[in-house]
Structure formats: structure tokens, C-alpha cells
Amino acid sequence: MNEIPPLDRNAIRPGGLWRVEVVPEAGSTNTELIARSREGAPEGTVLVTEHQTAGKGRLGRGFTTPPGVALTFSLLVRPEVPSEQLGWVSPLMGLAAVAAVRRTTGLDTRLKWPNDLLVGETKLAGILAEADFSDPSHPAIVVGMGLNVSQTRDELPVETATSLRAEGAHTLRETLLVAVLEEFERRYTTWKFADEYRDVCVTIGRRVRVHLPGGTFLDGTATGVDDQARLLVAGRALSAGDVVHVRPGE
Image 1 (cartoon, rainbow, N blue to C red):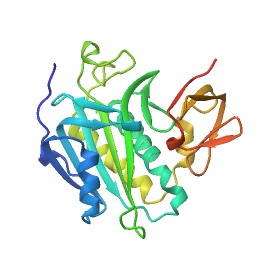
Image 2: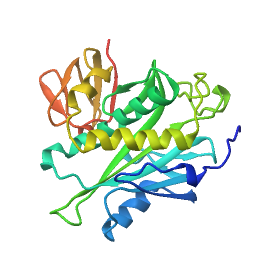
Image 3: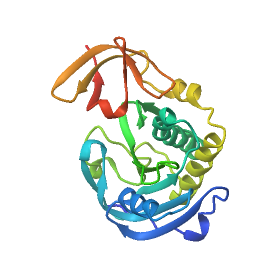
């Protein structure tokens, strides 16, 4: 496994909203931040790890990240927006990642709804958002991301995955993290990014087959993403929690 140098904590200074902590190893940065949120951790807390041993994906899927080859972190926000808008936090992280990768490497990245970061049809990063409603008046959202940085193609877990190195792009993880946090905060503070998200979402306009819970399917063209970040297919508005997979349609 190709490793890159350990994160330089002194180089991670995004300023603004963020308070960044780097740890050598964590089971799941999302799980850790949710626990801290329930204990009153402030908005803007960011937890970064060199080695994630029990990462969490959608629908309870697990994964591990080898030491030093990816950017793995979670952030905590407490959005002052109507509850029906909270579904936008995860797509916002995806949009921030697109902007940050383009800014630091020049690599053309796009999003598959709701938040998979793609280069062409291969996946560069995955994102998971989890909510903490322990304080109903100030709900918290924890968003985690794992972005492949230095793996060669042979080191990637599946053929549908890619990394910055595999795409011929290079940047320091510290530089990339600071860029993601800056791009996130710039949009978060205005909450005006839905149209920008739609512009980089490759799902819109495509024929898709949506895998729903219970083994059922919905076929149709994805015509848009509504004001609650729901995917519009065949006259239905689907939230991320309603969907198992979105695959290309026939």
C-alpha cells in the first residue's frame, strides 16, 4: 500500500467556523462526533483521522480505510434552517468537495445524487450525514467524508472506485481539507447553493432505476432535485432515506 506523509496539523488552519482535531486512529469519525454532539460539542467541530477502522456508509454498510491514503473526516453543524431543509447538508458537503477538488487539482468532478463524488463514472469519495435530535430546538448534523487520495488503481477496493493519484491528480491532504471546509462554509453561511448543486449533479436528466426498500423499483427519468434536496423521478419526490440505490436505467 502506498502511504503518504502523516497529516501536518500546523498546515490545517481553515479559520472561520472550524475547530479541527486530528487523531491517529478512529473507529468512525461520524460516530465519535455524534457522541460529542450529544455532549454539547459546538458547531464547527471537525474530526480528522489518519486511519478509520470502522467507517460507516449508507444503510449500515461498513468500510475501513488503510492508514495514510485517504482524507477521512467528519464535521458538525447546527443549521438554523427549517427542518425540511436539513436534507441539503449532505449534498452541500458533496458540492464543497467538487469545488475543492477542482480548485486544488483541476480535476473535473461531478456528483451523483445525493452526494457521491465522481470522476467520469468512477467514485472518488463517499459521504454520509447523520442527525442528532437530542436537542430538538437545535438539531445537529454530522457529515463524514472519505476521499481516496494516494491509492493506485491496483490498491482500490473495487473497479468502480478511483483516487486522485489514479486520475493523475496530486495535492496534499491538508490543502484539500482546508479547501473543502472553506468551500462548505462559504455556501453554508448564505444557504444559496441549490442551483449550483443541480448544475454539477449528473443524475439529473438521466434514465434511472431507483432501488427502493422491500425490493421494489422505480424506473424513469430523473427530472430534477427539489427544494428539499429530493430526487424527482416519475412524479415522485424521493429523499435519500427512501432509496437503497440509484442505478442507470435502460
